[in-house]
Amino acid sequence: MNRSPAKTFQDLVVRQKAHQFVLAAYRLSDKFPQKEMYGLTSQFRRAAISIPANIAEGFRKRGRSDKARFMNIAQGSLKECRYYLILTGDLRYGDCQEALTQLEEVSKLLESYCSSILLHSDS
Image (cartoon, rainbow, N blue to C red; front, side, top):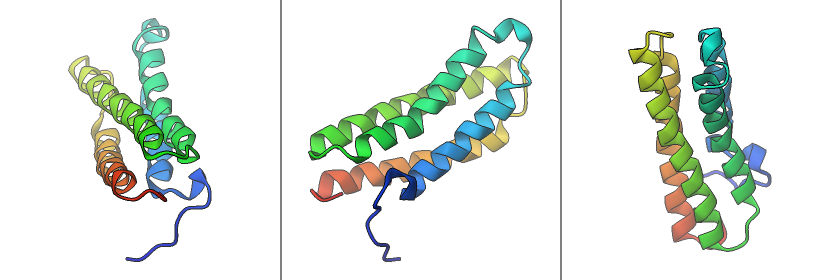
């Protein structure tokens, strides 16, 4: 599949899918107990938002290493979210399957996007 280069960060499929994950994270964390408002709820949401936010921020960076650094931060936030989903399941705060499936898709897309950045100077 041959796609034209993204003109804005909103055009990036990986950013779109990461945004959908954020929405799923909010829906899931809305069901957490009130006592988690300043704990797991806040941490999970912040990490989830960090994924598409760093993709967006890195999009306009000029150098490959700068772009790659922001994508790496997004990957770190993704791993953090994966842990929060494990914890959510273990605490029986909700069904994490939808969010885990979305997160896996974002992970694969982000890995591919990172590889593309490192291989091409005009990504």
